[in-house]
Picture 1 (cartoon, rainbow, N blue to C red):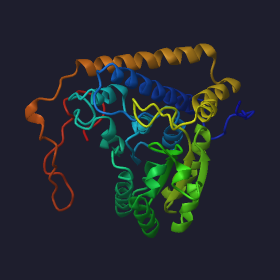
Picture 2 (cartoon, helix red, strand yellow):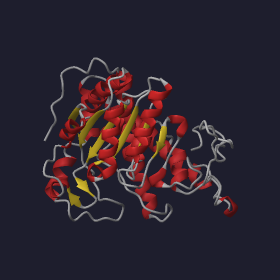
Picture 3 (tube, rainbow, N blue to C red):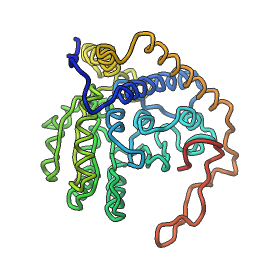
Picture 4 (cartoon, rainbow, N blue to C red):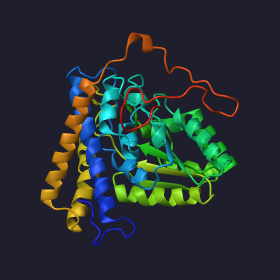
Length: 353
C-alpha cells in the first residue's frame, strides 16, 4: 500500500522544518533500535518499552510547540522527550544509570525529565501524567503566560479515573492543555476493542465540552496540523482540546515480549504505513531531499548515537552515598526551592530535573 503524496508541500511548514521533522523521526527510530540492541546485550538494565512505529505523533506534536511549552509523557516515552529536545547522550547516560544522565541515572527509561526544556517527566504509572499536566495548565493560567501544556498518554489511560478527572478539571478551569492520546490499539497485550464499546476515543471529548479530533498518527504533517490548531486555541485562551492519534507500535509491549497477540497480517499492514518512509517519499517528491542527502542524514544519526553510547559508557556510576540525594526538595510557601539544584555532574547541555 502506498500513501497518497500531495503535489505540493504544506504552506506553513518550511523545507528546514520538514527536514528537521524527518531527521528527528529517524533519530527516534534509531535510538530505540540502539537501546534495544544494548539492552539485549546486557549493557542496559531494567525494562524498556519502545516506540518504533509511533514517531510521527511526538514529532508532529512538538513541532507545533515553543521551547517554553510543557509536556508530560509515559512509560513508552523516549520518542516524546527526544521530540521535545532531549539530547541522545544524556538519554543514554540515564538508561545506563550514570550520574550524567538527565536524572543522574535514578530515573531510567520510564522517568526521564528535563524541567529546563519543559519536559516535566515520563511516568511509569498509566494515566500518571494527566493530573500533573492539569496542574501545569492551572499554573500557566494563574501566572498569566501564553504557554501551552501537552499531555501524551496511551489508549489504556482513558480507562483510568485520572483521565476523566483531568479532562473534567481542564474543561472546568479552561486551562491551556492539549491531551494527545497515542492510540496504538493495544493496552499492554489487550486489543482496544476488547475494552471499549466505541473505539473512537476522540468522541469522549464531547462529555467535557472540549474539541476532539481523531488524526492519522502515521502522518507527521497531519499530526502537526491538528496539534497546531489546538495549541493556537489554547494559547489564545480558548481552553483545552483532545486529540486521538491512531498509530501502532511495531514491537511488543516491552523488549522481550514476543507479541504473539498481534496478528502477523495486522503488523505487516501497519509497517507498510511506516510514517518515516512516507515522509521521506514526500520530501523526495517535493525536491526537498535527495538520496545522497538521505544517506548523509543516516550517517550523521549513526555517529550521534555512537557518540551517545560512548559518552554513557565513559560516565561515572553514582556513589552509594548519593542514594538518598534528590529524593526530597524543600520549598517555601511560595513554591521556591530552598536548596539549589545542580546539573547532576554534567558539564554541558540540559538541566537537572
